Length: 178
Figure (cartoon, rainbow, N blue to C red):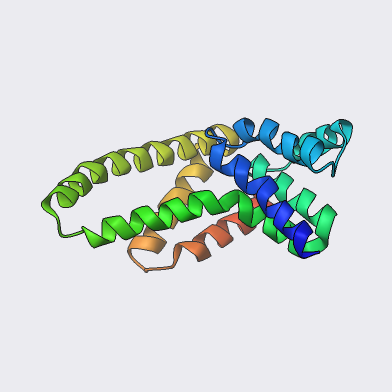
């Protein structure tokens, strides 16, 4: 069982490390591991899992890793497959954040942060605009504006946590827009 869990980790860790470009870039690498190297699936089974994974929301590589890991070694196998897929990004992010934290008082890092903040603000503004535009076209200007204004008031004036506003919006959408 330990050997199988190690194989599951390797089968999904290697594609995650060398598959630059996200899920679509790692799919052939995952296929090589699970079909050719370990023989856990046939090509047809892999294609069916890929098709099923594409119908669900979220990153394809993590869904496939969790499913294939689960099919081979149960819950622990699914967890290890999923972890192996996200581990390279997690390790790199922790390392980079550690370096950034170590040099946070450096004038160069402060300058970099000052350059990045406006860019992030613009990107968030564009994201909010796209959300509002999509809401406007799907539910109309009155409801989209009302939800936006009420949400802004609740956050800014009454300091309501955004998670409660999101939950309330989901409930409103399910009841009145579903």
